[in-house]
Amino acid sequence: MNASILVTGGAGFIGSAYVRTLLGPEGPSGLTGGAGAVTVLDNLTYAGSLTRLEAVRGHPDFTFVHGSVCDADLVGTLVAGHQQIVHFAAESHVDRSIEDGSGFTRTNVLGTQTLLDAALRHGVRTFLQVSTDEVYGSIPHGAATEESPLRPNSPYAASKAAADLIALAHHRTHGLDVRVTRCSNNFGPHQHPEKVIPRFLAALLSGESVPVYGDGLQVRDWLHIEDHVRGLELVRTAGRPGEIYNIGGGTSLTNLELTRRLLTLCGADPGRIAHVTDRKGHDRRYAVDHTKISAELGYRPGADFETSLADTARWYRHNRSWWQPLLAAR
Ligand code: NAD
Image 1 (cartoon, protein in one colour):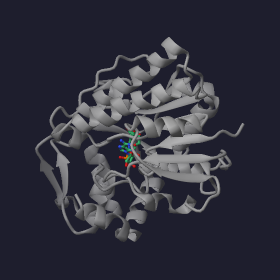
Image 2: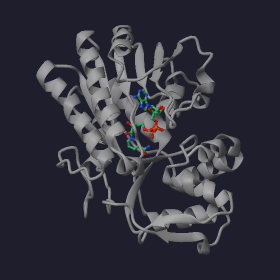
Image 3: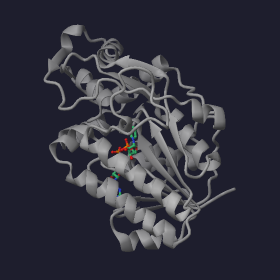
């Protein structure tokens, strides 16, 4: 059934890919758009960019609203006109949260609370809270299931864990249909060059070295953005209220292995790796078990990692005019 959907943070990396998919025809196979009216609420921080939404700006079902999820009056007005909320808006960069966590608590925690209050007041049908595997913290072995304890280590991860718990409490206390997704590290085109893959690609394409934190043996699971979008749509359309769904990509690599692949894709030699002081509180290993979403909703990560990493590298090679100003503005 079509629904009017309020997408917060829809000018960001993942939110914009989601909106482009909802409004098709760019979407990955199996998703053909036609979701109904889609409104993006985004206050266009340094991480937000309308260029990511160019493909849909003329679409009759698309509306963009410039504003913050912390603005209760604006949020109330918007939520009153929508049946569903897909909540991406967040401060999302761990390193920034280590420098100053206050904006993370404001946007990620209080912004979520503001949306939930409005969702309750206006009888929103479904609230999809887009979260992260970082809430589980470092996993020495095995993989985190949805039942695993929350052990967030960075201020960013702690703010997301807080938001998840507040959202789920609104399900238990008020019966609001809240669904939470927790995904692993995303990659793909249009990602801000502060995040590791685009940051390293930008450095390598600019003839610079790449700063690898510590020994580079931290392990991450990589999820192509199209697989993430597909997982989110499965949860929005067929997930169960009050449930958490992990969304993994199925490719685990150390940061050093990832860096070597990026060097190869850019024709650069290993001498371009510069080991730098490790990030404070750096989680050693993330791993999510996505058995639940696979068994219940038929999710399978479809992207071949090597191919999609090569496609991503090609995109950054051919779209310097997109990322160079973002790097310069940092
Ligand atoms: P992003 O930083 O690219 O985009 C965030 C968007 O939110 C930006 O457009 C920004 O302008 C907007 N925003 C920030 N504060 C706002 C506010 N107060 N009001 C309205 N809009 C605001 O982030 P992303 O990588 O697209 O991540 C989206 C969501 O997915 C986040 O909630 C993040 O925690 C989660 N997530 C991301 C990853 C990843 O690998 N990128 C992994 C797991 C989870």
